[in-house]
Length: 321
Image (cartoon, rainbow, N blue to C red):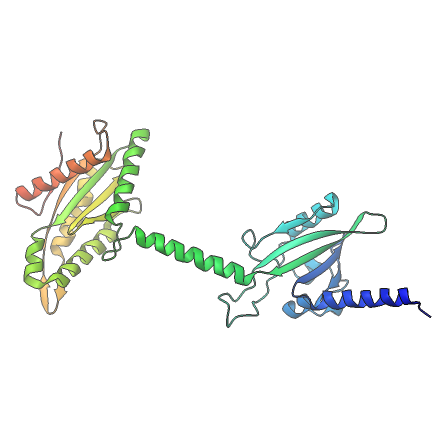
């Protein structure tokens, strides 16, 4: 017959096993051969693999989709160093590819996991087994991801012109300053194109401001189609636009400017049954060492633009010293 202490020990063992099976954390115990010795209810429920099948099976044989090289390195460090190892969902979204069990209230169909690997010692104090703990952190992960997306969208909106989708004036000028400082370091050619829509006030007065907005959007869309990935365009204000052309001299910039001018001269805006045609005037200025700040570069490109307007509009002028 068992005495009271033995009965208490058996009760404690029963409680412990019950807790391990019902706790909302995955628990897997493996030996040095990576064979599974313990597989709790969490793992059984989410993997669909029953405990009777898991126990004694090699973890990589049972789950070939596991990152074997990474997990082997983690486990071997735990066995060798007798210290814990960790992995967060931000480093590796999951260890076991489980579906989220809160698909209706959550925002992810996969379970994000934090992982802790704990060394387990035997009677001789040597590490004989490792316990892998799987924590479901899907709610935390999806909340952070949504917050980061919202912050990125706010950042994008803060630098984007709402009507055209181009860089707004503030952000575009920041990029102009960056390009100016890059030139000072690298001495690589760079050009600036400033342009605006000819007689835009007449468009607004004749067809209305909504029609004017359609003209501005067409200009922006055409610009985005023609520019290179490295070019930086922005709406400078009203009907005026700017394009930064890195690694481009003035003659090369004129080629791009003329392509834009000719494309827009041939374009038409259809608004409430009326066709609106328009032209643009452009000024080009290549950066030089005589400039001490980006505002000078901007002013000289503007001067070239105004020369185009004085000389009859619908043309491109290069600023010459």
